[in-house]
Every structure is written in structure tokens, then in C-alpha cells.
Length: 248
Image 1 (cartoon, helix red, strand yellow):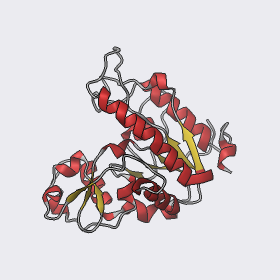
Image 2: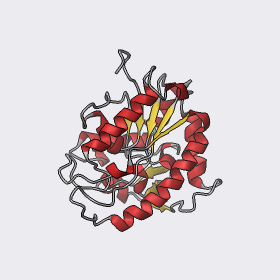
Image 3: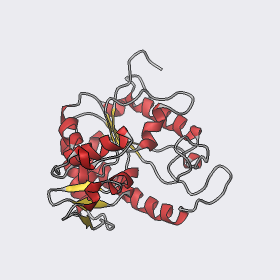
Image 4: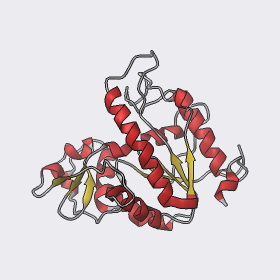
């Protein structure tokens, strides 16, 4: 640990955000946390939104839907004076086009009136991830928005089993998601160029924790996973960290 505060913002999921709460030595909380937004949505044009149409009890759920529609991240990221951490677990949600732009059709979105608006259509998935495809194009647009700061890419993947060694019900989907994510992280890092600082916790720690505060899911891990992640992020972002040379 150093005396210099570790400062970063997060574009990603609770998979990474949990490292600021869980484990033996959590990270400090991010300055900004943009969640439940896919890369193609983040860089798309804003879509009109009336808070009345987002009648959800959770303030977090309301906030992420509103920010995804208004593209708050795209307006905020260029002015940051500190590094950014990114993971792609939220790429699991479908995409929808509102007639104005692309939004993330998360489970939260689907519970609002927004999903039932006239003209909202599903966006085809970019399964091929070619260098000229929509995901790659969106990654390059995201890279252009990001400040000239290090970008830590948390290579997060889905777990296949829980702490009892039981195969998760979603294991088939998880394997397919992980194959896609492996290629997607490579596309993102290529777009980021020298700013990309990839980190990946020990795959042996990629185990689902049934007693996790958010419940059992392929991306709710054991505490040791967050310890490993926190240690690697610190090594990248602390001025005297062992990987700090990557940031200059």
C-alpha cells in the first residue's frame, strides 16, 4: 500500500465493482461507475427518456437506465484525469434500437415502459467480432472517447461451477459467453492500443459463491477472486506498483 490514493473510474459490472467491497483488502470505490451499458450502446446517439417511464424501486436501476439512454458515460469519460477500469460482463444483455439510438436491453430495462415503446426493435448480435464489425467499430469509438490515461481491462469471465464443485445451470451459456468474451477482450485491447493494461485473476478462483451478497450467478465469485483482482489493479495503478511502468 502507498500513501497516494488510488483513483479510477469504472465502465463495467458489479463483477469489478464488488472488488471495492469484498475480499481482505478492497479497492477504494470508483469515482464514476457506469454499469448495465454495452459498448455499442455507450457510443451510440442518446435516446429520449422520461423518468416517469422508469418506475423501478431501486435508485441504482433507475440511474443506470437513465445514464444508458442519455449516454452520460460518453460525455463524462473524455474529461477524466485518472485511469479507467473496464470489464465486458454486461455484454450479456441484448441491444435495442429506440429509433434514436442503441440502448442496453438489460433485465432492468425490460421491466419498464421503455421496452414497450412503439418502434423499439432488437439489434442483431455481433457474433463474428470481425475487425470491421459493429463491436470493433464501437470499441474504436470508445477508445477515442477515453482520456489519455491507462485503461485496465479486467478480463472477467463466467464461472462454470460453484464452491461445492457443482456445475451451474447456466454452464452451457457460460461456455459460449466465455468464447465470445475472449475474442471481445482482444478486440477491445487492440482498439485501446498502448493504453490497455489487461488483468485476469487466477482462473482457478473463477468459482461462483452461493452465499454471495447478490446471490448465486456465474459472475458472483468467491472472495479470493476479488483479492486477486484488487491486488492486480493496485499493481497497475499505484505509482510505485510493480506494473506501474506500464502506465507511463
